[in-house]
Length: 70
Image (cartoon, rainbow, N blue to C red; front, side):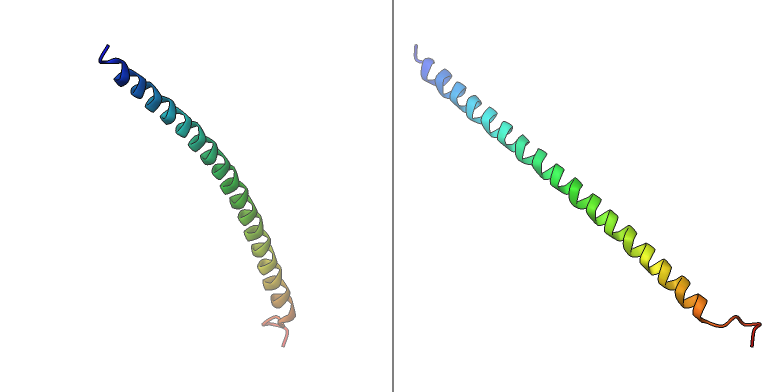
């Protein structure tokens, strides 16, 4: 019987550890989802910025006179 308190404390510790692991997994899942959304949004905005700068380069190139047309 002297081992009964040890077993009770061990079971309580394992229960607390399991609860903490479940909560941590939930937080990590939400963080991963948020990180994915931010990454996708950043990728989209970067693509739009590249397209705008390419269009600007084309517009500037069209305004310049050709080298042979002087």
